[in-house]
Image (cartoon, one colour):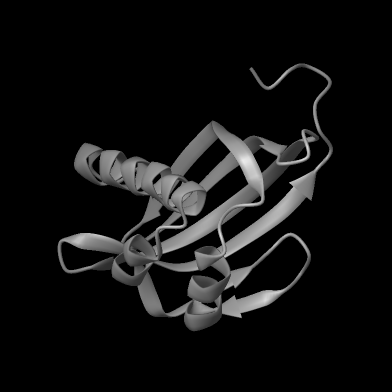
Amino acid sequence: MSNGTERDQARLRHLNEQYIDAVMQANVNWYQQHLAEDFVCIDSEGTVFDKPAFLEHTSRGPYVSNYKLEDVTVRIYGEAALVQATGLFTRKDGAPGMCRYIDAYVRSGDDWKVVSAQITRAQVRTQAAG
């Protein structure tokens, strides 16, 4: 395992933040640009979305009113990278939620594309999400 260059680390962290912002803003254009054509997402319910289905699902808007990232780690393996994080959120009905996810990226020219996302719901921590 390599931590890659500082530039790659920073870029992947930034892409991860943009990914979450795109969810919150239903920004399908961001995803069209940054997801690989063969992108696959497995959501917390076990539903598998290919890129077109993910874009359609994203266009409906988020089911949460806010989302905070914690414990973001980036691991780079040559031309591939894994970004793992915890998300603390509030559902639109006011209930707190937490998930953990891992996204797989591959280098594409001078940048990175998301090829896979896996989301797992987790039990909400007892402390406030802040």
